[in-house]
Amino acid sequence: MIVELAHRGEPLDMVLFADPGSEKRGTYAFIPVFRRWMADRGIASEIVRYQPRNFKHWPPYATIAENMLTNATLPSIVFNRGSCSQKWKASAQDTWTAGWEPAQRCWNAGDRVVKLIGYDASPRDTQRYHHAVGCEDPRFAYRYPLREWGWDRTRCEQRIADAGLPVPPKSSCFFCGSIKPDEVIELAADELRTIVLMEARAKPRLRNVDGLWRRPVLGRRGATPRPGSITEFIRERGLLPPDEIDRIIADAPLDLLAFQRVQAALPVENRTPIGYWLEEFNRAADALRDDERGAAAQLQP
Image (tube, rainbow, N blue to C red; front, top):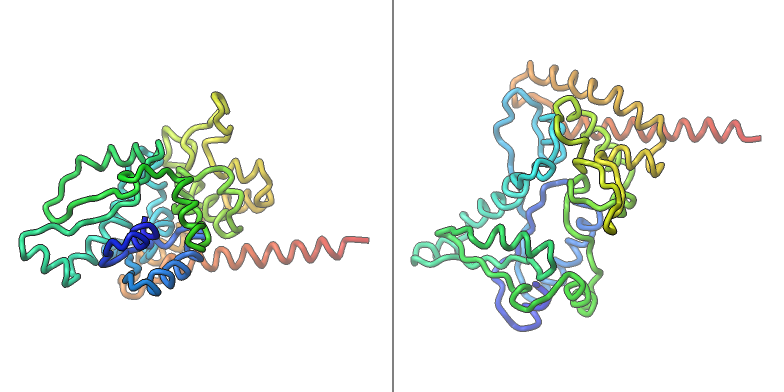
């Protein structure tokens, strides 16, 4: 959308990227590339983030993944809700825009800020569009250029490539309930571990879903078969060693609970963020894997 609008000479006052802290690595790699491309064409951009403030008795968290682990739950999309996008993306953008002087001038003049939304004309985005199109906001008017042009995702990818840019992956958190099996296969070890931990941490509270993928897909009518739990997919495909998966499930949720209990006794300003615990969790897992590989190498004749 942005590439084509720039080509057509349509003005863009600001491009916002709302960073929930848990996007795929390919998305984070693309951001500086595209921001340079926009800057070369005089298009301003900003990265905005939701700032959690009320931690109650929990350790501070800064990303949506840390939020899920803190609350022992899964993203709202798993339960057919969309509050994670509202909290971590829309509200972050709206908060930034509320302090933006051009927006304030617009509102003071009795007008609405025009938001350009990148829903395309593919069936999946059409569903999102129909859900959002009826929403009215006195501050914003919404426009959907890709739908105006009738562009589906394939056409969008071609337009990006024609501009000489790398085509980025579909933006989503690496543990999103809508992530596809082939996307899981491409995840790094620390991301896979976080998924296993997240499902194990939430499991005692789950009633109607098996995990991040809700329920198994049997593969009928052309669908790709998969379990309801991404952990089981990781195990089936050998993406993590089975003993590592077992250790995470057995030990990590209890270790995290112990960490939370210690932090709960401290004033909030003295608590260690959960992000530090997660870093240590992955550092220890990497060290253990290296030790096991070293031991295996020594056993070779």
